[in-house]
Length: 179
Image 1 (cartoon, rainbow, N blue to C red):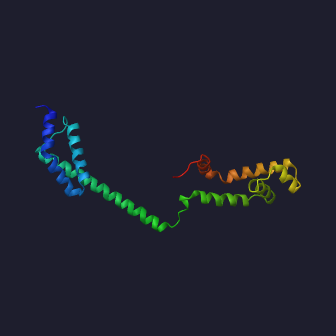
Image 2: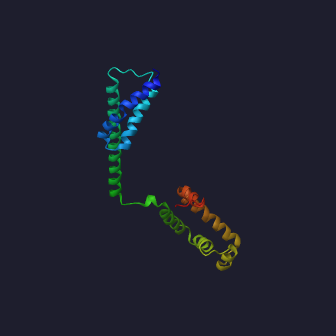
C-alpha cells in the first residue's frame, strides 16, 4: 500500500474524533477543524522523518492537544496584551499624537509668532492676506527687494523650526485622503 492510500485511510478513520477532541479545547468548530488539518498536513509533509514510538492514535491526539494548548496560550497572551493596551489608553487621556496636524497648526502659529515683528507682518500679509510683494512694499513703504529678503528669511526660519513635521507636511502635500 503506498503512502497516499494509507494517509487517506488514517485521515478518514481519525478526522471526526480528532476534530471533536480539538473542539473540547477550543470550543469553535472552524478552529478545531483547522487544527486537525494542520496536524494532518504536518504528518504528510514529515511522513518520511516522523518516528512514532507509541501508536499512531496516541501520536495524533497528542499532536492535537499540543496544537490546541499552543493556540490557547497564544490567545491568552493576545488578551493580556489587549488588556494592557486598553489600560494604558484609559490612563493616557492625551490623544494628540493621533492628530499630529493639530499640533502642527499650533507649532506653525507659534513659529510665525516667534518671527521678528516686521518679518512676521510681511509674512502674514503675503500668506494670510495673499498680497504680492509689490503690494506689501507699497503698504509698508519698503523696497520690493526688502520684502523678498524678509520673506526668504521668514521661510528659512519656519522651515528650520518645523523640520520635525517634514514627514507630515509631505503626507498632506501628496494628497493622501482618508476614507
